[in-house]
Image 1: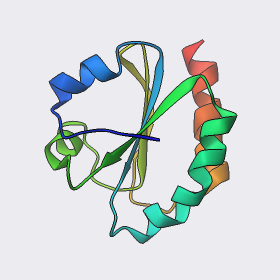
Image 2 (image 1 turned 180 degrees about the horizontal axis):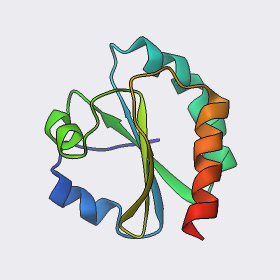
Image 3 (image 1 turned 135 degrees about the vertical axis):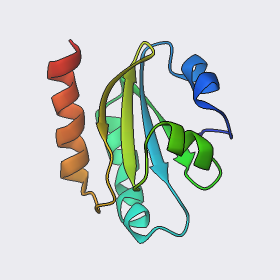
Image 4 (image 1 turned 90 degrees about the vertical axis):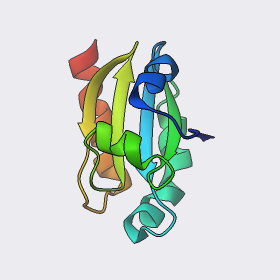
Length: 110
């Protein structure tokens, strides 16, 4: 999974402008992030139309605040630069919950 360097919300627009992008906000100290991380390769493989990008919440604390990401792990989906959905809260997420979220985007975005 690609790692997002430190950037602002304005700079992020360039990263998410083409195609479908899924931002995965986490932090090294977060036990719930560690819980979902092993499932991420399988989730990425299941949704090849999305480019998954890991965002270190601590490194990108200003970006997280600008995007109203105050709980991790969290996911924000974009399609051609437009936000199409978010799974943003502080709850532990299972692989099934993340997949259900992504599946719900397909019905909203197409």
